[in-house]
Image (tube, rainbow, N blue to C red; front, side, top):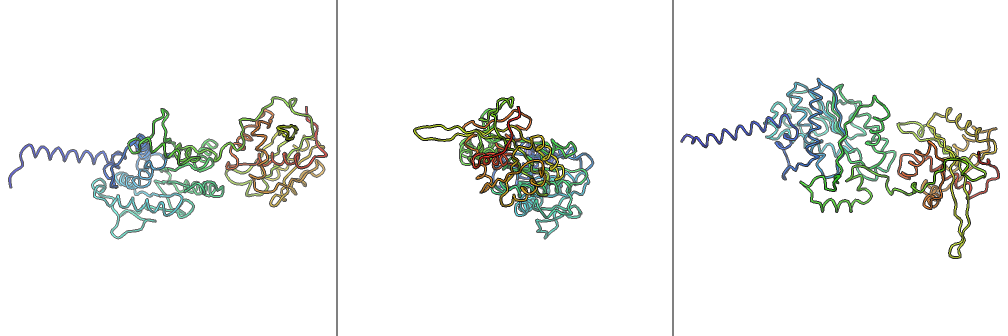
Length: 495
């Protein structure tokens, strides 16, 4: 066998050095790891968001320091189709296990999301990456026992740490994770619209947080479908409670501030333009990474007329309508319903247009009280409010179907204090509040400028898909009280 020429030997040496350097980088950098073990038939496209996500993951792993450092949490918000699941749910578990093996930690990991099928698919991909030749060149100490085909729960050979893949609302009981990945807690628009589903996924996420080891990494990577989804609740929890785990948020809207698009390395501008058109009302969520209330501006809150004094309000007999959070279910939870008492009045203007006589109505909202108290404190507030209004005030509450109990409750609370009127609005909440659209759209809704404005405006702006509609419900009772029947008692405006 002829000896290699000096030039060929030099070339091989250079190539070997390059391979060794690539392996070194792949063990220390998540982006280089993904490039080294890339498992798909097409090239790995790298965009600005790809680099920043990988850098953030590297920072989290460095902070974690093989379980000897501190916890680190990420909330990653990326448009669909931009590779989030490849980075967070397929490639990360293998990389994390390799880094922990180097640090001498027998690591546990949990993959979870809206359904078992979704995360079990990620689990299968993670195992295939570990079994690949490329991966074994990097972390030869991390192997999967021969014949282990489970995707729900599996271990690295010779280790006690467990990798679990289960749906967010079940299957992780008793499990622990040094790394916990939550990928897409909501499947589609239909699920996002369901308050029951949103509460269940948030409860599941809270349960996930309880499954952490003392030092851990939790990563949420999901599309925000709704203004009241897990991400919104996570932001609120962090704002309200200094002790709640802190999450670093990484958000990458499809359109950059300069008008260019996020991922030109993979998608041409035409693709983005088509997707914005195709997604319609869901484009802010699926592409802009910030959902808006679907169908927005049913009530044109920008048209509301604000007044600085009750002197600007009409004289008349006002009524206070109550929407009660009566049941334990409505009062309990992380974001309970409000009990709302709205003091209002309706004026009428008869006009003739094109020989047709029509009645234009103005809704005047003079005061609103909100509370989220248990029944005794709530009832005490109602009594105090009614006493302040005066005995001639009409207190009104819906007494129809499931709301009969609320009427009975209010009547008992106000016995000897005020008269309670029944309101019997038919249909669902959108039908009940429908008559309010015209005064909102015509700029004929008036409010006294007061601290309660913000919450009431918010509820109207987000109706019917917002987290709360107690204020609109109370306003609908006032409106119906004046337009369906003429009150015989009431209170002159307090000047």
